[in-house]
Length: 178
Image (cartoon, rainbow, N blue to C red; front, top):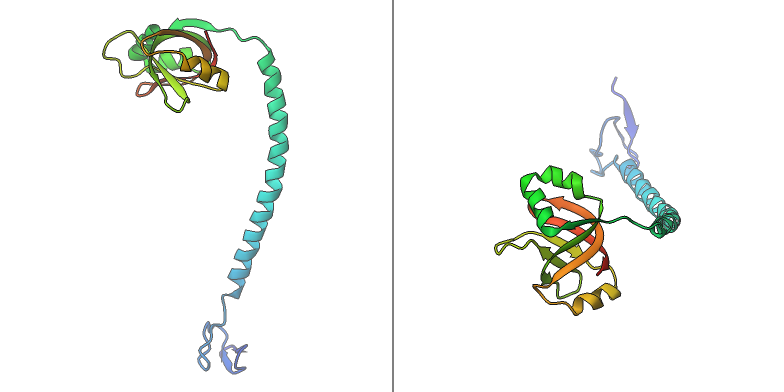
């Protein structure tokens, strides 16, 4: 004996495993999936709203902690862009270990001033250099100093080396322009 059920639309006896009623041709299953999906979307939205407010408070505490760290004087290691580029050419991994995440006082030739005031580039003294140190400007005071500089000038900067790579060279967040 085959198990049967009643169609919820036309009330006719139909096979229990039927997904479409053979009499009225209406779909019988699938309603559960849309409710499960709708519930998950609502829960994700609530989680995003709730999680977003918590991350703001943790960001505030992180910012206050980092400002306390900024009060401690940093020790900068003096190095020329020429030396940095030589180290990078000889061994990129060694250069990364030596300079990445370190506070440096670098001296080099100013070769590019970004029109939007976001960065400047320092290169080694060679005539055919294509990579060097891209130095990111952090505030209006630094922009004002950079605005008075000219290409070819020798510049000394203090900052943190944030990235090292054999293709793009070095990245430095400027703390101070001397």
